[in-house]
Length: 393
Ligand code: FE
Image (cartoon, rainbow, N blue to C red; front, side):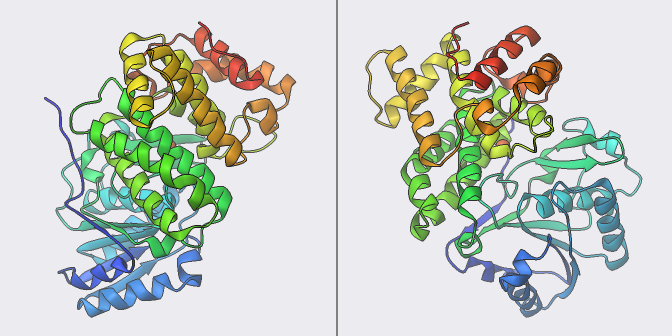
């Protein structure tokens, strides 16, 4: 048995934030991040729409990037006191991820993070509240996914929560919220979305419900990401929808080792954090070369290339075109081709690569990758991404 789960409603289009007016309920708590929604006036708008809906509104502000266990517990406590029947989260991935976890602890104060960490083991939510997600970035697609990541800063452990219970009830995709995104973020999050769609399409859990979403998302990223990067707002609107389609695909088909590698290298080096989407963009072409040794994956990568109208008739030529196209995108978006180019020190890389490889193989995303991988193969693969060498094993 497979399950395919999405929000019941996805509102999209300029100004659709206004849909908050039509929620039916008594009390809404609005969970937001560090202040960009407030500065741009969207927070006030959301509050007044919720009031127009006849609701009492309370704010939970200041969710940090990479939200902490403490923030989640504080938010859940605020919810237990206020007793909202709607949780409305607005902002980048972080406030939405945090609000998803707050929701679980609001409804079930006795559960622990360790309980929730077991995949697909959540208690039945929606006993007290329903959930709205309003993204202000175009990449993570947390507004439609069954995932949330919470960080325990005491132990340095990230809790990846996964359960269809935390797939929001309503997603509101208002492109006006993404018009002010910095172009670097447009590039990184756009490549994150492309990675979501490609990994979902070749995942071992791909299927007839996720394939069309993944392909459509890939096509839209190819069509619109460069223009969105150059601040064409029509293209940026389309990217907001493309990343959401990619999210619908990967929430149900899961991901692969590009994400395993990005998760385990993101904070591994002393020279600074590698932004998630940037790491994915660097690794994606190398991982395609690695995975393409698997026959089923090769066929699927070739299908992607064919659908995108890339050059080649043989499977091999089509896959080469796809890899070249992704490198081309990275150049256009000013994303480095290798970890070395990114600025990771060679000595530090060599010292840490064996350990990182082992961790990456153990990442939750490795299980649905189309080709299996050993720690020593992962190490070789990481070395290829460091020096920019072809993957031929
Ligand atoms: Fe991602």
